[in-house]
Length: 288
Ligand SMILES: [Zn+2]
Image (cartoon, rainbow, N blue to C red; front, side, top):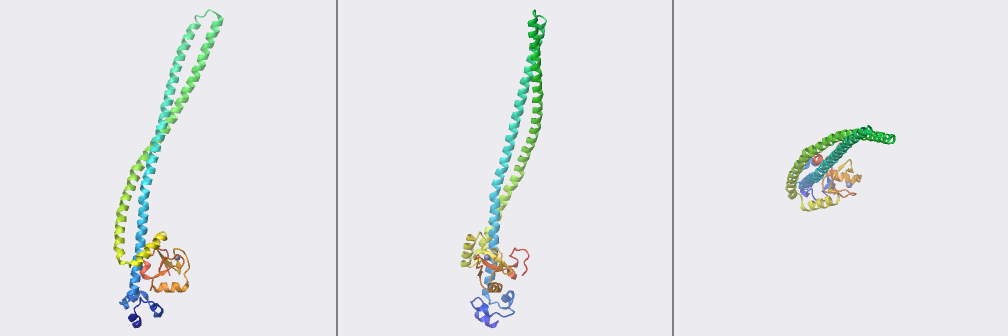
């Protein structure tokens, strides 16, 4: 202890002469001058926090960006429902118009038939009589056909009326969804803005506490590694790229004395078994 104290733990080489019962979490208490580890621990903790903050910001920004798209989709759904309803209403109107035309035609045919029947009483020749009879029959046929069509149109009208009721329901649902969920989405987007602002503030608070070179290193790694600059290590495995670390590297990492990087993905490593990082790590089943 004495020896280490005088040399300063942050210096290279000190790690190799550790006491066999060395307990890293006790070191800052037992040895207050041991600034090297303390600083490393702080920096790592801050970087972990920073990564969490940036992750949250990204999630919130994504949510926020999704809101207008979802609202637009709901608006589209509503206008489609309105279109469909208008289409059915138009079909019903034309079915009703057609039915009225048919009914008018039936009336007219019945008038003609009545006249023909009267003429039947006045005909002079058998030929004329037969011709008039045929005319009456033909009209009769036509009336029957038209009446069938009237019934058909009534049925069409009924089924259209049912469809219209269904489309009215769908339209009102789409409208309600837009009113409720749309408003909710807008509220959430506004809330996301506030949260992002407070997270950015938090980031600004952390930034001056991180050594500039580590801040830059972190930013570079984060930009090139999909926003993940730090990788937790659990049971000697990098939890991001899943590489099994060489045994000596894992031992050194557990000592927590210097910044270490994954030989495979180059991310900044921290061991989840260490007291200082246990809280920060979000891995399930964090046992050593
Ligand atoms: Zn890795």
